[in-house]
Length: 229
Image 1 (cartoon, rainbow, N blue to C red):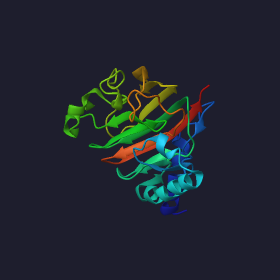
Image 2 (image 1 turned 60 degrees about the vertical axis):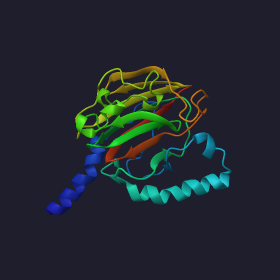
Image 3 (image 1 turned 90 degrees about the vertical axis):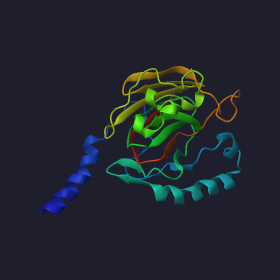
Image 4 (image 1 turned 120 degrees about the horizontal axis):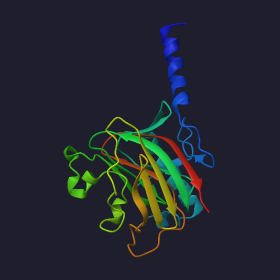
């Protein structure tokens, strides 16, 4: 067997060996192979596009895939985005849930996780060189940044790992309340999430999970969700 053949086999086996086993009671949102189950959205009020007629919504979803395929791909069992384009969005909408995922990113990147289509659990370059300290980046990732200046926008503790290392989120959403653990540290404690488009209005009852990206490459893996009563 040639070295080239051995290398191909090694690369095929690596994702399987090191992927996190699916936790009991959870469903995988990413199958580790392709973008099945996802489409593309920007920062859009879910109350608007959810009211489209079925035919119009299907067209919107289908049209988004051209942009998604341009900026997203799967590599060694990881979702990879080049820091541009629409945000990867679940086809399914969720109400109350527990979400697990891992990510790693690069300097100057700015990202986040939209819950029910609502921005966002913040991910960013927390160094002074990243240029976002004036927005609160020095406090770390994991806060509900668009709650600013209300409860939950600033993480309770700095929990980010250095660039190049994987970070782990455990996020629970129950009605409008959100709790976030980043790398096993509590950073948001049961804070009410503010409706980005109607500050005093309620959140939508159900919405998608969105992986927001801009400014630099970000990788995601081991994305699991458990729907709660």
